Image (tube, rainbow, N blue to C red; front, side):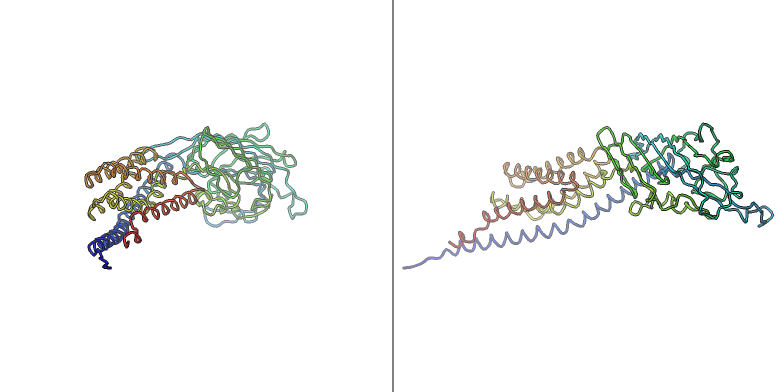
Amino acid sequence: MKIEINTENKTSTTSQSFTLLWKTGFIGFITLVLLIPAAFITELIQERQQRKKEVEKDISHTWAGPQLIQGPVLMIPYGTATKQTISADAQVDSDQKYIFLLPDTLQINAKTKTEVRSRGIFDATVFQSYIDINGNFNQLNTKNTDLDPAQILWSHARLVFSVSDLKGLKNNPRMLIGTNEFPVEPDFSGMALFEKCLVSPLNLDTLRHARMEFSYSLDLRGSRQLHFLHLGRETKVISNGDWQSPGFTGRMLPDTRTISPEGYSASWIIPGYNRPWPQQWIGLDQALIKQTSPNQSVRDQDAPIEGTFGISFINTLDSYQKVYRTVRYAVLIILLTCIALLCTEWITRRRIHVLQYLLIGVAMVVYYTLLLAFSEQMSYGWAYLAASLSTITLISLFVRAVLQHLKASLTIAGLLALFYSFVYYIIQLEDLALIAGSLGLFVVVGILMYLSQKIISPEKENA
C-alpha cells in the first residue's frame, strides 16, 4: 500500500499558523506601544483637573471658603490686674489668667442651599447657609479647685465664637443672653481663642451664679464644606439642604441621615467625653487655636482633627475622575478589539494589514481625548455616548472599506458597542465595580477560548 502525503496542505497550514502567531505577537506589541499616548492622556486629564481646582479655589476666594462653626466659649479674666511695661507702647497683665468655660448644651440647626458658579467651562459648588445656634452655660464650678472667687472679674467676661472665613458672613450676628441683646465685634486682642474671633463683651456680675442661656444666628456663605466644632457637654446638630450627594466627613458620622433626589438631612448627638477638651480650665495660652485651624480641619480630609465633623459638598466622582477611570480600561478595549479583528480576519478569509491594525489602535486612543473634550462641555453620560458613537462609526466604516464585507463591519461595530457599554456600566458602579469587571473578563476569556478552537484545530489539520 502506498501512502501519499499532501505536503502542499501541510505547508499551507504551517504558513497560516506562522501568520497567526506573528499577528498575535504584533497585536500585543501595538497594545504596549499605545500605552505611551494613553499615559499622555492621563497627564492631560490631571492637568485639566488641576486647572479646575484652581478655578474652584479662585471662586471660593471671591465668594467664601470652607466654613468651620466654632464656639461659643465663655472667657472670664481671673487674677490681679497689675501692669508690667514691656515698651513705651505695650503693657501686659502679668498676673492675669483666663477661665475658659464650655457650653453645657450646644444645639445647632443648619439649613443649606447650594448653587453652581461657573467660570469658563469650569464649575464650582458654593452654598448659602442659615444657622441657628443656642445652648447654655452652667454656673462656674469653683469647688475642688484653686479658684479664689474674689479674683474672678465677672464684669470683664467675654463670649467668644468664630467662623473660618468671616468674609462669608452676610449679617451682623446678634448675641442674645436670656432676653438681653449684646453687641458682637471682631477681636483684635492678643488673647484670641480662635484664629478669627468674634466677641461679645458681657457683664456677668448679676449672672455669676445663674444658668446662662445664649442664642445667635448666622447667615453664612461658604464653599465645598460646612464643619462644626464639638464643644458642648452634649452637642446636637441638625443639618439639611438640597445637595443630592453629600459627603459626611470629620471624626464623627451622623447618627441618622437621609439622602434623596430632593436633598439630604442628617443629625448628630455627641456626648462630651468625645471632646479633646475639659469642661472648664484656666490658662494663659490660646487653648483652642491649634485644634481648630481651618487649614487643618477643613482641608486635610485624610486626617481630620478631633472635635470636628460636618458635610462636604464636593462631587466625589466628577467627570474628570470618570474619564480617568475610563482610560484605565484602554489596554483592555484595544486588546479585545484587535483580537476581534483577528478572528474576523480568519473567519472571512480576508486580510487586514498590520498598519491598518495600528491605525485602528490610534483611533481608539483618540477616543479618550474626545471623551475628555466632550465631558468639559456636557455631562459625562452624553460625552461618553458621543465619543463612543464617533469611534464605533469610524472604525466600522474603515473595516468595511478594508474587508469589503458588510457583515464583518457590523459585527465589529456591535462588539465595540458591547465593550464600551460594559466599561460604562463598570464606571457607574462603586462597591461592585471589581466583581462586575472580573466576571465580565472571565466571560470574555471563555468566549476567546471557544473561538480559538474554531480558528486553530490541530487535530483536523493533521488529519
